Length: 492
Image 1: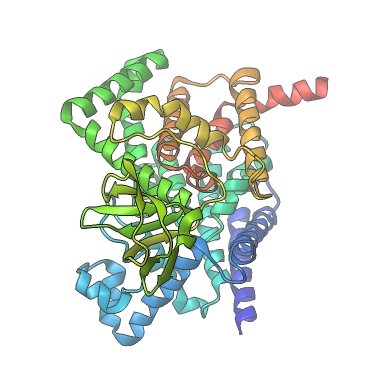
Image 2 (image 1 turned 90 degrees about the horizontal axis):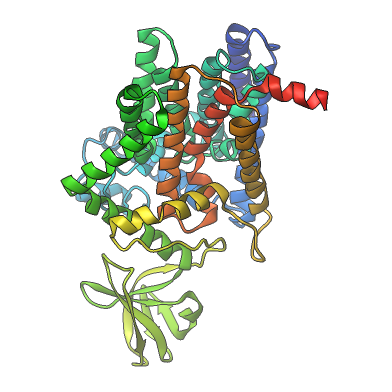
């Protein structure tokens, strides 16, 4: 039954791709889009393999595995109370008592208070609804999510084929099957639906189409982007302030960028939001550093933890949520809400028992980052480091796994493509196209800043930088003069 259902859905998606190809991409054979989607499905199988067998020991692991498990827990609520199930689906009851009644064991849904909305819940909701038609076959979920992101690339293609002289087939491949973009958007995590939303929103804002076609794209794209990656939508809104206001006031766009930067920093400082922004970013950075370094976090008192290095966990016997000290060990005393300040100490009382707050494995792909420590000006000083890490990590080293090398090679290809686009074979753009390209450049930089500030793990950087990759691909499509490049190659 499972295999038959998978074949049925595969056939339906391929037929839909065939119809879309025949109706909207008449310059390419009707089988082009179906073949490209088959490659997208291959990416989905590769993702499933990596996180089931390479990392998971035979079971789907990491965020994808947790999302799928928690969606099953949410789906089971329907059997107990359809009314309560739809309260969860539509977010009608967010009381902790109600959540604990059904979802107390969940990690992503029941993740505690956050500054931004809990976007993980939306992924769980979508997967819980898909369980009604998937019979629990996880690959069917992968196909639906993959198709969503594939349609995002397809929609961008419909705009860019009018602007770019890159051959249609190559342009379509770039927008739908660029390696990291295709890999992370062929999963059951946040990225696929965020990519669809981002793509719709970008076309809705920048393409010269009718008001009605713009409107539904902006609304649906905005909702999807907010739902699955709120900070990406915030970056979009900031960039649109530049596009609709600052870029129109200056003929020379470097002056517009300078004025925009001065204005933005001044507003943050004058309103006091600079400190709040630094606090939020610093806390995200600290949380991710904790994940990177691993180790044991023990409750000290109401306001403090004891932190023990990952390599020193064997100094404790851990049982039933408590850690009993077996021999003296070096530790750090730190505040629960400001844990970048760590005071060295030693736990000497053998036999003492401490409640375990958290135990984490050490990350295998560490990236060094400069601590922000709630300091806005330090955050600004970290911008070059953040951009470097976001666009060039993972840089291979002795501890690198084979999975890091393709990402590094892809980053080098992006650097090479940027050199071709901006220095060797740039295309002359209209004033509006220049404003679009610079706006998307700013968007990519803002995403890179946030990712680089907060993410000290290269394996996570390659995932979180994906929205910037979408913007970069659009810029390449607009700016690269493929005809000049082709003539140069054949002439040589």
